[in-house]
Structure formats: C-alpha cells, structure tokens
Length: 156
Image 1 (cartoon, one colour):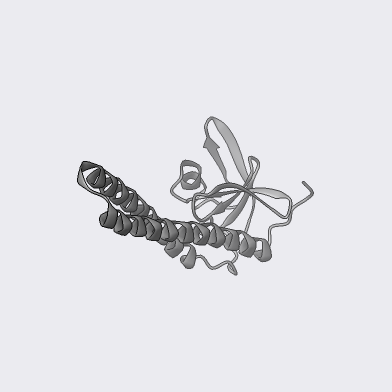
Image 2: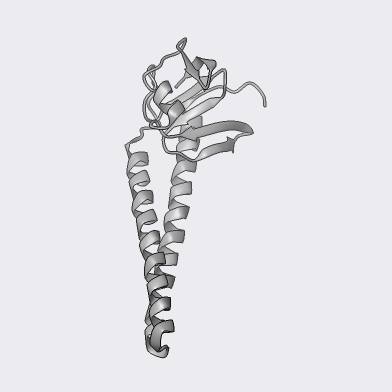
C-alpha cells in the first residue's frame, strides 16, 4: 500500500461501493421474495394435508424474513442518499473519510473492510462503537478504542 491521499474522488468511489453493495442486496432479496411467492402459489395447487400447511408456513416465514431484510436495506439506501460526496469535512460526520493511526474509516453504513485502489478501508456506521467515538472528531483529535489510543491524521 503506497501513500494514499484522501480526496473527493476517493470518497465518491467509496460511496459508489456502498450503493452497489445495498443495490445488489435489494435485488437479491426481491428475487427471493418473488421466488417464495411463486413457490407458495404452486404449493397451493398441488399439495394436500399437513405437509401442505407446513410448506406454506415455512415459505411465509422465509418471505417475512426477506421482507424485513428488504426494509432494512431500503433504510440503508436512505442513509446513503443523505451523503454528499463532494463535501470536505473538518469535523467527522456522516460521509466523512477519516484516516487514523489504526486505519481509514468511511462513516456511512456498516459494511466492513473493503479494498479500493489497492487500499483498505473500513466502511462503518456512525452508530457503531468506533464510529460513535470518531463522530465529531477533527484532525489532531485522539480517541481511545479497546484500550488503544488512536490519532485522527487526516479527514475529508
């Protein structure tokens, strides 16, 4: 990993990565919901008795779970739509890219570690434990996380 410069183009790429992650998840869940509905419809036509009821109940539960996950993903999409990737931040907030002595964090949604342009980033929610500590910090600030002192080196 070479010397990485934080810039607005990098923030845009990270935001695009977040959108792609959520969009892919939404498409997959919609397909699963449609498949479950088709399965329930075909189950109705050919089955009889307890076996039929058990199958329908399981499909209903799966559909309910997928619908909940879809609602959560749609909320994540709403969070991403609030982020303006063309803004530079002096104080950490939603959409900030924060380089610390422990790693570089993108405060948006909780995805975890990703690699962009050969560099590792941690895409985290501002409400995560370390995200909460990073919020409202500025360059030169330090926080303590899991007993480690972490210095904010750069931010955009």
